Length: 70
Image (cartoon, rainbow, N blue to C red; front, side, top):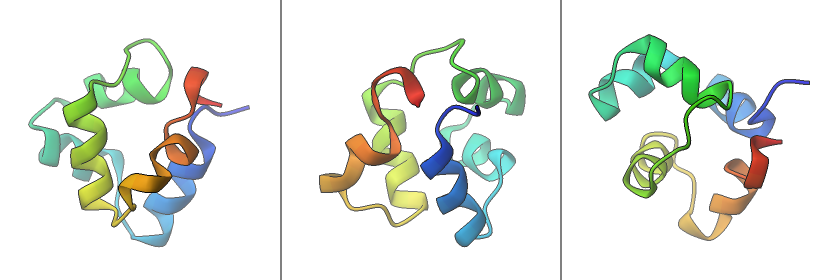
């Protein structure tokens, strides 16, 4: 099972890629990949930036960034 499944679906709906997220966060694509694979924990500012990029309401953060990434 892929981690952050709902977030990946939202990215597809918005036609955004991990590279777009990397650009927004000013990170390298491999670093963003590590976040998606659960090897790095998302920082709060990164979560808010991704929500802004993908038009995710802040009230729904826990749905897209669940504990453990499931």
